Amino acid sequence: MDTPLIAGREWLIEATGCSASALRDPETLKSVFDSIIEDLGLKTIGAPIWHKFPGEGGVTGLVALTESHLACHTYPEHNLATFNLYCCKDRPEWDWKDKLASRIGASDVNVTRVSRGIESKPEAHCDENELEFQMTVAGGDA
Amino acid sequence: MDTPLIAGREWLIEATGCSASALRDPETLKSVFDSIIEDLGLKTIGAPIWHKFPGEGGVTGLVALTESHLACHTYPEHNLATFNLYCCKDRPEWDWKDKLASRIGASDVNVTRVSRGIESKPEAHCDENELEFQMTVAGGDA
Image (tube, rainbow over all chains, first blue to last red; front, side, top):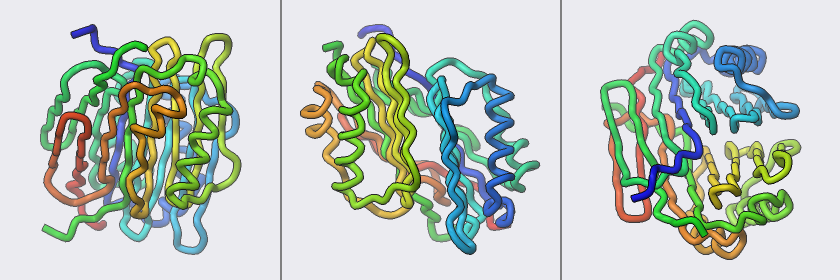
């Protein structure tokens, strides 16, 4: 077995019990992105993509980073927001639970860490509120 | 237990053994995105983000979809590409293995499906080449 090849880490976030009005407000979600980017020392590439779906619909946000990308999708009808943060460089944990509680009213936040592009056996570590899941790559170096 | 709340499905793809030159070519990767979008009947929102890192560096691509988003990051130095396809609406499987073999020379492709925003107990189904992982959300409807 070669040394694990880790191309990056991705955090998959499910935030429930959120304020529906916050989930329909692109400015609120942009400010969440700004905090994540500032707190973790990330660098954006080009202009982000922000889209508000019509009427009672939610918001999609996508930002390319020199460290990979940040995305969110909101579902006001379910008081749900999901986030993806993919970093190809090591970064500390962001305090998703407290920050999303204060910024978008999340009552519960589930964080899953995924290691991308590694060579190792599949492994999943689960506890009550946080799951770690390592993806496997069986291939070689062509 | 309430009925599971499924906000979408995400496919996380690791493709190894790829052609380094394909992984440095935005046009090749754009054509892969075009095929995914066309084959699965997806609709793009606004302009995609494409970034080629300098010199021997890889490519980042991000496209917002009415169904959520599609992303790729390539690592030519490791002959590795990763993709994320997040769909908030049900879509068939794309043939990642054969398509990425023919388009970017991938010798091995690992596909992980993740259900986003569901209310249920954690569950992971693993087999040799394909992993399914359901994320859990413990929160309620505030």
